[in-house]
Structures are given as C-alpha cells and as structure tokens.
Image (cartoon, rainbow, N blue to C red; front, side, top):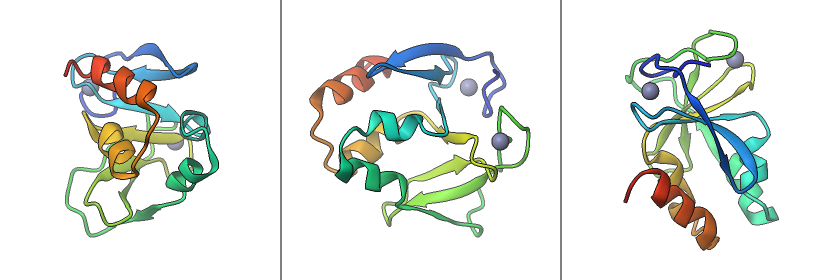
Amino acid sequence: MNCPACKNPMVILELNQVEIDYCTACKGIWLDNGELDLIFTNADQKEIAKSFSVKNDFDEIKRRCPNCKKKMDKVEFENTGIIIDKCVDDHGVWFDNGELKSILISAEEHNSRIIQMLKELFGE
Ligand SMILES: [Zn+2]
Ligand SMILES: [Zn+2]
C-alpha cells in the first residue's frame, strides 16, 4: 500500500500486537477499520473512535484512501483541532506525523506502553 500523503510505499509495523501501515518518509500511520479499536483496548478508549466528527470546511488537501482511492473526509477529534483523514467507506483512518500520539495524549491515554512505542516510532 502506498502512503496517501506522499505516495511512498508503506511498511508494516506492529503496535500493541496490531499491524499498522507506517510511512517512513513522512511518518504517517494508516489504520485499517477496526485497528483503532484494537489499539484502544478498554471501553473508555473505544469511545475515542466515536469522537470523530466530519469537518467539511477544513481546507487541508483531501487525500485518497490507499485502499479504494476515494477522497477521504477530514474529521476532527472532539474539539482538539486535531484533523485526521477518514475513508468515506470506512476502510480506515490516516494520521499525519504525531497525530495519533496527540489523540492518545489528549484522551488522557494512560497506557504508557503504547505511548512509549509511539515515541520510539517518531524518534522522540
Ligand atoms: Zn508518506
Ligand atoms: Zn476506502
């Protein structure tokens, strides 16, 4: 699968026993539908996945789903200003560099193992 942002081929990484597609060039992450739920392992965290609202007035360039090639929706995570791309047919979601971590932190994610893995992933 190619990166929806910079078109480089993505590599598959394992995060919390979930396989994710990662772009080494722009450090974005693609999660297939359902993988977000697998990463957020308890009920509170699962609510995170439902907290995305579509923002059509956002003027970032629309990216195409690496699976179906349709233009993805821009969705905002609650009112954090963090905007991610989500396939209109629910194939998955795209996080630019650091966005997944920001969401985990803003959701007061206390699973330090995941945070630690993300930090390693993003070289911080
Ligand atoms: Zn990329
Ligand atoms: Zn799609």
